[in-house]
Figure 1 (cartoon, helix red, strand yellow):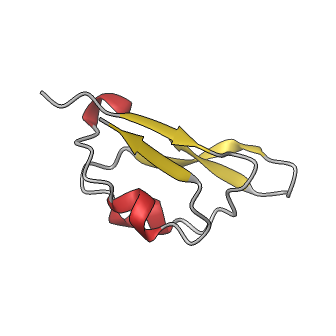
Figure 2 (cartoon, rainbow, N blue to C red; figure 1 turned 135 degrees about the vertical axis):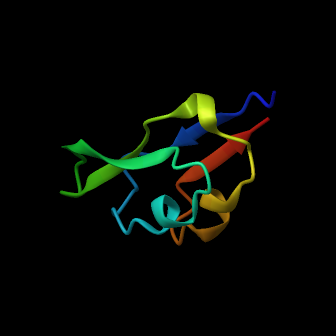
Figure 3 (cartoon, helix red, strand yellow; figure 1 turned 180 degrees about the horizontal axis):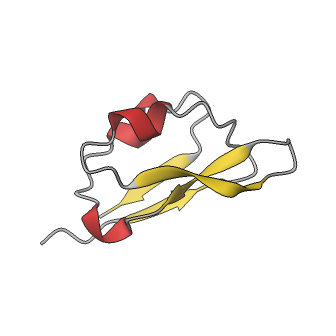
Length: 69
């Protein structure tokens, strides 16, 4: 089993949802809280399902996601 850890810079997220759409395991969701920029930021709603494929980090235009294996 792969144990991955996601670090998300919530204050930099612009809620574009690109990471949500590319995640093959549906780990990410847009949360209900709002950051200082006024966006509902992405959260790792199902971290136990992450396979560390890094697709979310690769597609993020603002580089707010880091994946650690």
